[in-house]
Length: 452
Ligand SMILES: Cc1ncc(COP(=O)(O)O)c(C=O)c1O
Image 1: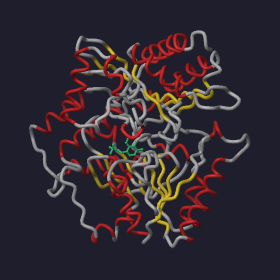
Image 2 (image 1 turned 180 degrees about the vertical axis):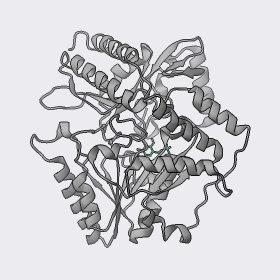
Image 3 (image 1 turned 180 degrees about the horizontal axis):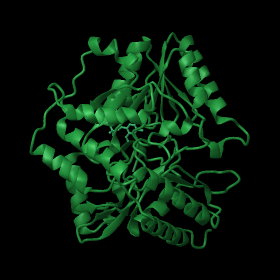
């Protein structure tokens, strides 16, 4: 199949339609029906796509009751169909569901609690339905306040799908060009850096150079946006602190620092509630989404009040569904569950256990070049040889497929699609971690038989 028409273009671990004949008659019928009704933009995951009919806690279930361990989804992070979320949403849906143009103290109560988590500086929250909308709004706020248009991003970043946001998303491929006012900097990739290199210094220097380049082209710098855990760049958690110099340079040049917390936010990284807090920085704007409502469409932009002081009165912003009462009730339930069930501490404890487990399995396989992670978010990077660190995408795909056949769901990340992306739910217990590690060990043994 030609690259131009590849059904998986731009998406990692996507099903290739060329494999249709390998599926069961039922699966073929569903895939063909999707193609016919939803059109070609919709992609399925895995070389052998999977069908689900229900979910509960950390498990998802197929049509015949097959049980899959969810180690991938970053939306139902407090647990699939968590009873407290279900109850809060159902009750609110049966009571009142309306928008933000009427007085309702529930959104205020929630916002007060959310603002406390940022630890100073951030004081206002605006609600949207998706992370993309939140990033879009954050860019507008940054551009309005600075009078600039120049945005800096890392070289394999994904921030969302609106026209403006797709144009700052460097992962989108050649048919979605990066905006001419965007400059890219190298992601702080410790595994691939020369030994001894200070990644924070390099990032700061790259930002300096990008701003200088903008100036040469008559572009005024508006801001720098980064996913605080660099999910698509390959998942880059260490060393903590490497964002500190970056924020200094951004501020020196009058720019706004936007922390994209759509992935690492809401306790995902364990020790901290927000990913940027791992680096000891205080952003100007924080964007969040995904796990915020455990599946209800709620996302948001949290900002320093001074950035909204002039923007708010001058720029009309109303988001019909953003922050509606039902979504706020879901978001409130998520915060309550994280607190009441101690999920942040759980994430830290079970996360460390899993990281040690992956590292210990990695010792048996030279093809595993690196294992990294924070909280319950891990990458396992495959290389053809540990010296050259050349990517082994083929092996990565096989391991993802092998885990899927053994009913454990993960995916891939990184510019070369050669890192496993493992992101278990925050309510993962040690027994689930053991199931994941044992299945990973079995899969590695099977996939590398005769090779490792
Ligand atoms: C880092 C990051 N930012 C923004 C988004 C966009 O969020 P949404 O899909 O809710 O529009 C995503 C989605 O995957 C993301 O990973």
